[in-house]
Length: 119
Image (cartoon, rainbow, N blue to C red):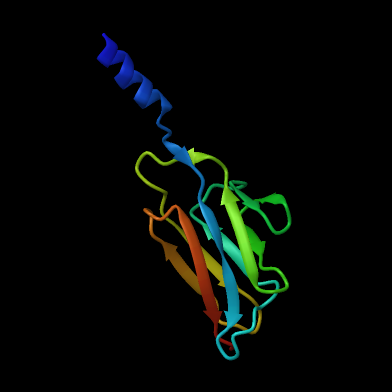
């Protein structure tokens, strides 16, 4: 009976939920300088699931880099039973080539250095 209680307690206290944290810096491939106001779109993620830590708001499916090219977003609490979900991000800004990046489903926290090429 003690073993059963112990096993139940361990299973009950073990969390199967977590956050996905997406952060990084977007720079010009030409000179390495951070690019402001680059649109970062979250693909394959339900709307209003991410919190834009730069602007302190929940976002539908996109947010922008700050004046230094930095961005950070955190998901709401989501199920991590089978690891973090697969998703993609798209970064775009007028005058630069758009990039789409696939996120490995086993990476819960993703930090990126994205270099954009000018058109």
